[in-house]
Image (cartoon, rainbow, N blue to C red):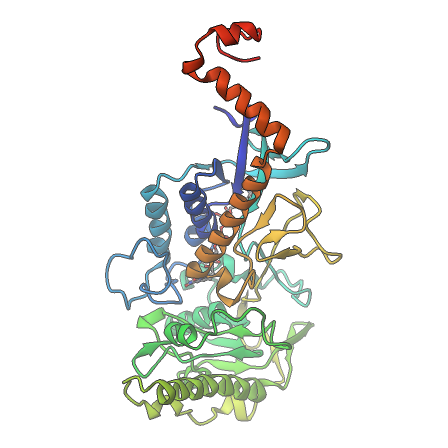
Length: 450
Ligand SMILES: Cc1cc2nc3c(=O)[nH]c(=O)nc-3n(C[C@H](O)[C@H](O)[C@H](O)COP(=O)(O)OP(=O)(O)OC[C@H]3O[C@@H](n4cnc5c(N)ncnc54)[C@H](O)[C@@H]3O)c2cc1C
């Protein structure tokens, strides 16, 4: 059946981890549905990440409940392995996913239920639409980016490997997980690297024989429903690269990287930095130490037998670039030929013509159930809690949405007293014990349809 002729109960848009999880729960609940994916399953893991990326969480943690990764559960699967995992997962329950079909518009029907969905393969009518198009859709480069054509500028979403860049030094702006890993890879490849470090959290990779994902789990941090006020835009620097190491900016500096403060502006080939590097590092240290404190308190309270690890609190001395931070850098003199913007992403719902947004254009929803009946969001950061945009977290949010859809079905299936009476009469007509005489008496045709 082509999309042109199709009508469906629930349409899921996007077959990343969110779409696959949604399909599993809808399948289990017996809800008729279809998943449309414009490219391939888990495409962003394949083509919107750099070559050497490995998962930020260990294999035992960053997965769905009903399938384990092959290999070491404490290892960090590569990005292709993660994508293959979701393909295998979808195959496991024969998910109804159609790849290569892009949704270009969703409009609420007037005077009849549901939505008209325009796709690259025709129009679909759907009673419900689950938007699972990703938490990180549109790479964002801030307006301060220079217009100097002689410098190659790219977003971290377009970075692949060091060989892709022109020779020379590199300025990496943004020191979350992406920026820090890319900067480290470039430095290891022999590049001169300047890393612009803003406010960040940097949890320990592991502590007392437990990965930080485990600590966030037992300490209830993954379940936090809202970001700490004032820290909504603080990035988190964590990595599974090279077997998984705590990100330590001072160590990176001692190994040869130049750390600078927040990138402020570009003028005539000169970039200026805020003088906030030491303060940003200090707050990052505080974040690390607060997690160690919380972990120690948990061990003390529960009596759980985990070995002490006092060296986790060691902080290297401040390197020269921290004690005497650069205020500005002449890009040409420093031979900086590339700027990589590891500055995050935005979402784009311009194709979603429904009443599901607030006055600032942000999705308005409660745990993914939007204010427009029948429209659901899945996979957004903090959709229900901190874990929502991560692999394991989205699976639980998808279950909540599937439950909501099933409950809505129950309401719509409700029949009032007179309808139930009609239903009973029809059942009698169909009941073979009443024979065909009664049908004839009521003027029905051979199929029993009145
Ligand atoms: C660099 C990086 C590393 C990360 N590492 C981890 C990690 O280690 N562990 C972890 O748990 N999380 C990680 N995340 C966070 C999160 O898991 C990923 O962003 C993940 O890709 C989100 O999955 P998703 O299904 O919600 O969205 P996406 O993977 O973005 O999937 C959305 C899908 O929708 C499709 N689509 C979009 N628009 C349309 C349309 N109009 N019509 C049809 N299809 C459409 C896209 O092609 C895409 O396949 C990472 C994120 C980034 C950026």
